[in-house]
Amino acid sequence: SFYIAQLTKGYYVMKKSEGADQLRGIYYENVTAVHPNTGAVTHKIENQLRVRVEIDTPSQGVFRTARAQTDIFKDVESSEDSLKWKTLFEFDFQTHRNGIWVSTGDWHGKAKGKYQFTILSAQAFLLTVIPTAGQGHTISGFKEVVRSFWDGVGPAGLCFVVLIGTKVIRNMGGNTRRKLQTRLPQAQAATTTKSK
Picture 1: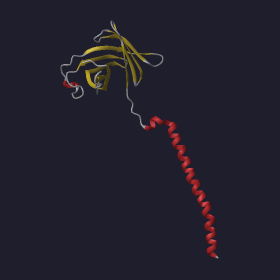
Picture 2: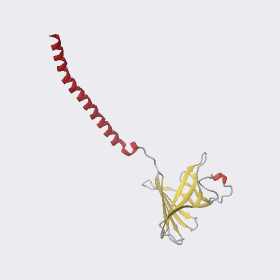
Picture 3: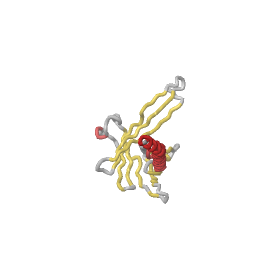
Picture 4: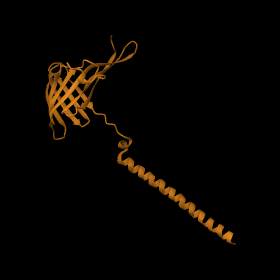
């Protein structure tokens, strides 16, 4: 059927393998489409892949994918014995003067070509693919970092809380002092009146 708009978002979910210099995970695409006549929105998961990143040195390794044969959300990779792993690209990162890591080389996907993989920070990367024929594309990735309330307000927030706390304590102390100053003469007058 024909759709007026279609948006495809790809997702990688990766974890470090225990005892190995390897990352394992999954890749999938969430395809959202809007039907032009009804306006109905549909979502479907496509292009489910198993992913392995084999790390040879801190800056070199191989990125491999295999078409998943079972549901990637329910079954673990080890239940798929007949996976056909294909090398998508080999990486060899060079650190630039500004601290950004960049790797370039051959892309072995469906459309052969070149790639540039740039790690911008511990939380973000850009992977640009330039096929020999056709139009290239860029994949941007990021790691979601869960932050607490205090991470958001930082040291300035802590200073603000201390400042307000100090003001409150001083005002409470000031009110108590004023009450004592008012009551002390009253108490002295009351004791003087009783003794007469």
